[in-house]
Amino acid sequence: MNGTSSTTVGRDEAAAFALPERALVGVGSRPFGIYVHVPFCATRCGYCDFNTYTAGELGTSASPQSWMEGLRRELDVAAQMTGAPAVDTVFVGGGTPSLLGGDGLADVLGAIRSSFGLAGGAEVTTESNPESTSPEFFDRLRAGGFTRISLGMQSAAQHVLKVLDRTHTPGRAVAAALEARAAGFEHVNLDLIYGTPGERDEDLDLSLDAVLSAGVDHVSAYALIVEDGTALARRVRRGELPAPDDDVLASRYERIDARLAEAGLTWYEVSNWARDDAACRHNLGYWDGGDWWGAGPGAHSHVGGVRWWNVKHPARYADQLAAGALPVGGSEQLTAEDVHVERVMLTARLRTGLPVPELDAAEQRAAEEVVADGLLVREGDHLVLTDRGRLLADAVVRTVLR
Ligand SMILES: C[S@@+](CC[C@H](N)C(=O)[O-])C[C@H]1O[C@@H](n2cnc3c(N)ncnc32)[C@H](O)[C@@H]1O
Ligand code: SF4
Image (cartoon, rainbow, N blue to C red; front, side, top):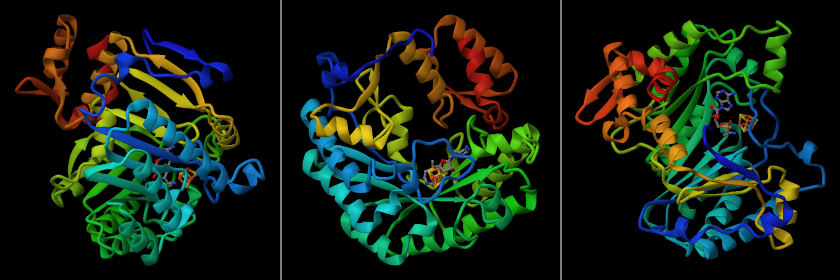
């Protein structure tokens, strides 16, 4: 990113990592979130480049136990460094958090409660893979204090799940969502991926029918990204699978938006739809420049304009914490320019829109051109993406910032 004063720190610096006083001003007076990264998966999906490891890849170098010990230490240090603000939102992601089981996830939340404490009405989400859930699992999470479940459904079409290397059967994600709701979860999200090679319009319709039959209050839908270095990228390069087509992706997005809107799920971020008051507060914190501590291997944090990230490998993560150091892999102090660029990039994608007063004169002129092109519309002192603008959100941001 332009103007970022980014540094990668070594072991000694990591041991000495500290937040400057100015970053801590106001912490606790604005929403504070905790993200916990669970770096384990049963198998690796061919499209995924997240920081996650199978048991075979880890061997004896790290385990859920060594990860949990490291996590407890990290949370304790985090609470000391930040003054332990009450936590407004928790998001346990991965990887596959549901591999920890209901008891393991309840322990994670217990560790957050004992280090920081939760604010009244806190939103507490865990991601889960449909195949590693059950009614008992959801009951345990509910009793443990979780308030929201996010399930990686991706598709309801068997052949699409196969291309994605997903191991759940087509009906399992909806069944899991219904089990979560029966356990008392009012807030359930289903993640979809669209544009997978071989997916047809009728496959997407099947997925949308399934999502709507589950009665969830939140849907995230992501265009399939062919990430460098993944098995999917190798298959596309060898010509075994076609790359996702931009026109197809655009028409699928429109199909998703129309079906969800008709059912009362409206977009609040380009890739996220929710019923009233069901937007994910934790993710809104990321998009609105909030404070959060990201714990776990490879997790990113942001507090008061300082951003840092942990070492990626679970063995190194646990070793550094056992040696008494924060497992910091790098950090950067955001400049005013960085903060501005990020705010434009993130707020432009939100239904609430881009605040015009935050744009300088040249940006406001560029934004007016985008309005004239029909990609942004003015609502009060905000600029909001039009339906067509949502398909071209990255280009809109580039034009405004050029
Ligand atoms: C990394 S996963 C972690 C949660 C869980 N293991 C799962 O797969 O649902 C979170 C979400 O990221 C999305 N995702 C991961 N890789 C992607 C890619 N290459 N393209 C589009 N979406 C992707 C999927 O929708 C997935 O549900
Ligand atoms: S289960 Fe989720 S995190 Fe694990 S490899 Fe698949 S997409 Fe990635």
